[in-house]
Length: 425
Ligand code: PMP
Image 1 (cartoon, rainbow, N blue to C red):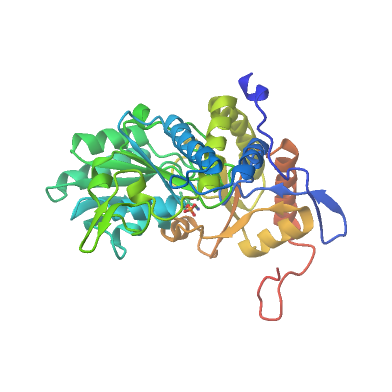
Image 2 (tube, rainbow, N blue to C red; image 1 turned 30 degrees about the vertical axis):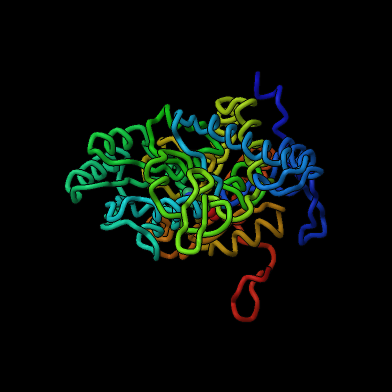
């Protein structure tokens, strides 16, 4: 298959780590949803780029020319990856958080924004934050089903004040992995004369997403969740609002001309890329986009779904383990499972999985406090999240299932709390 023809191995997959037992095992990373390790193919592009390290756009030297070409080529790769329409802008930003804050400061003045309480804080909060140009923000309660989500969005947009309106939704939940009905929400937004932005931070690493295929107006995502290094992300979509907005970062690159008494801002995309651009971030992010496309995102998705099924089936068979989901258990998900174990605090579970089994999960409320708190059974303050990706193997999945089964039955073998009851690192 195409998936095997392209190298989708990840850096560090074979790193061995010490356990509390003194044994060494390969690290079983189940924290892809936080940050995915780099693809080997991305590291190759990084290595090939480093000799030409230089600032883009303004340098006349050879290295600057190479870097500028690579930076603009990266923009074209990203445009292809997100299925950008002819006129769409691709703006390099720092990540999804930055992308959505940029959009909040670029919507037309007093734009009504409709957003679900299920969102990650990066898509929940920027609309009401300092500098946002949004007017009324309508926060919809957690919908009981995808149908209810579509209906709630339709009703909110219908009764929203006249004028520009924007619906903000996540592509896939970072807590439950549940995939939101983007096509239907896009149709609802458009039939109300509104726009939609998709927070694809968790969706796009797992499943192809196209602006032209879905009709969505904007997409935001982060390189570090897409097997590229930290520090670069993307906001892509319609140009008019972004082109009309004053840049939220003032500085070099964003300026067309500056005189004693006036500033003329540049056109897109430079308008919103003030300061020396993160060339290596953009180039490596684009390398990840190209690698996933060449490998075939559908094939990668199918492999990941098989591992996810294995994990969910294994966890479901363990007494006392509860999987957190907003919707029906058969609703499609990306490779994310959040769960709790009856009678065990989630921070303790996470500490024991790491120290005793070499398994890296995440515990907490996952920057989606409203959703996670709603899903948690009463006696729990936090959940454990296991998320999978390209480096996940069946052995990792079976190790996690075995470890959770043992913890659920017997608890941790060691003590991880200090005298204050805090989990020791
Ligand atoms: N949206 C979702 C759904 C996320 O999972 C995350 C990262 N946890 C973000 C936005 C924010 O991404 P970043 O931290 O890269 O800005």
